Length: 186
Image (cartoon, rainbow, N blue to C red; front, side, top):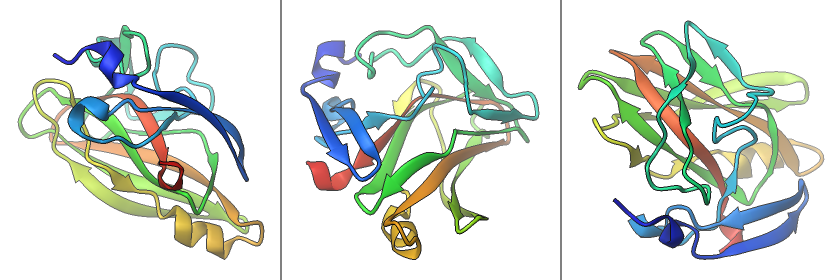
């Protein structure tokens, strides 16, 4: 297990076209020195304001053991086969290009299809960006693309509204600590 202190090597606050955000380095123990911001409610430790849960998805006891948010949590989100969860819509710009999270699969057949959902000019568009085959222990996902550069160029403001959608198949998966990486802020 990695020490919690190494997961939070640096904390900075920066301003973007979408507002101010606090950035940390939660994936440093896995060789990723990127600075990330936690998606609203993405630790699943408090109210899930703005999150949409369907098909029996719910919070459950158990959290990733690395304290990636700076403190060890006690809850995560269980997504049974056929269920899906979607984060609240958040403002992104062209610099918000990657996201990562922690995953745990309850069976070897469990997978998560991960999509980004954009609202641009009042139209909602969803794009699958990856399939995460988690492990039987908590592991960080790879860096998945948001498409933020393209979406922000399609918007007249240079920003777009994005949500993340996780859909399970083959068995129950759990997710925890969902982070957005504004890559241009390294």
